[in-house]
Amino acid sequence: MRRRPLGMRVQLAAAMVALAVLSVAVAGLLIHRAADREVADFGRRDLQQTANRLAVEAGIRYREAGAWTTRVVSDLITPETAEDHVVVLRDATGGELPGSARNIQPDSRSAAVTVDGRRVGMVVVGHPGGGFLLVGGPAGQRLDAQLTGELDQRLLESAVVAAVVALLLGLLVAFRVTAPLERVTAVARRMVHGEIETRASGWGGNRETRELAQTLDRLAAALRRQDELRRATGADVAHELRNAMVGVMGRLEALQDGVVQDEQATIARALRDARRVHRLVDDVVLLSEAQRPSVLVRTQPVGFDEIVSEQTAAHVDDFADRGIELTCSLTPALVDGDPGRLTQIVENLLSNAHRYTDPGGRVDVRLEIRREYAVLQVADTGIGIDPEMLGRVFDRFWRAPEARERVAEGSGVGLALVRDLVLAQEGRVDVQSRPGHGSTFSVSIPLAATDEEGDGDRTHAGGADERTRDGLDAVRA
Image (tube, rainbow, N blue to C red; front, side, top):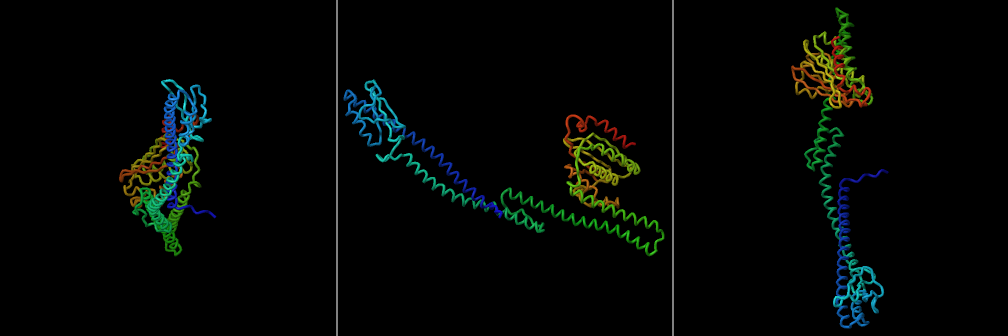
């Protein structure tokens, strides 16, 4: 059975308790080391002072006796034994005097015995078993052991207090942090069930929580817009199909009833309406495929300038028939794209410019390299787009009112398809427009990764003049 992960409140509280205990443990370790050093230093000074004191006293007794005697040694050592001091006395030659301790203890300290400026011996002082400082008389308990025990007790008490305080603070912080998150999560659950009008922001919380709530609100707004667009799309498709089918059915019923005078003209109109329905269905299919870029697009290194040149040349007659000047300026560019989908993009942009440019106008096609992208620009002198309408240019089945009045045919799918195909190839698409002055559509496609030798030179501007002349010749032909 899969274990359920711990909640944020438990994790925060546990983390703060662990941090408090760890802090006390680290502080205790540092205090222990500092205390050990201080005790050791104090013990060294104490033993050294004892050794210095015994050396002075031994010099006085040596001067009184005139030599090292058993009584002198006994008088020096006996009082120190009661203080748990192990004393070793040596003569001037370094030999141990009778009556003194036989072994020098670890961590001992020594001092020279001098009389009238002449060294007559040495005093070595230590503790039984070593160590610098003992307390408790003959029992000989170490002061550092007592300090360690006291420190451990105090540290344990501090750890308990710190853990309790940290637990309380952790719970307080956890509730303050998680309460807004729980409210945002509740809003998200409601959105999952279709309540996309609910707002997540305005519930307080820290900066990150507020940013999360604002992001969720933006997501909800996008979902509302998508829902509105989906409803509008269904209505637009139904409207287009209904209009076309009404014409077809009306003319067929008129033919069936025999009330038509010119049967051939009626059949031609019905056929035109049927083709309109067919074209609309094809547009819907293309648009649905564009939503699956992994299935639709197969990228490879391809000469974008060649595709643009071919499509521009293919539209020359259409533009010439309407008296529209078509110019072309191309820079060689090897991009990472799908040849068929790039052709669709160029064809749709040219068709859009042809449809909304008046006779006597002009359409400029330009391909150039900007950093890591090949940028195609199709600029026309057509009717343009109102600024408030620019945000909807690439929406599915959307057409500006001016466009509907100008051209009855069209489904509003072409530019939406351009956007989806460009995004599927990891590119960008943008539009700039002024009403009455025309529009400029820009499509950026990533350049293909090429070696420094071979055909990699196609991505540089060195061969731009020849390709530009070829493009212009193709347009003028």
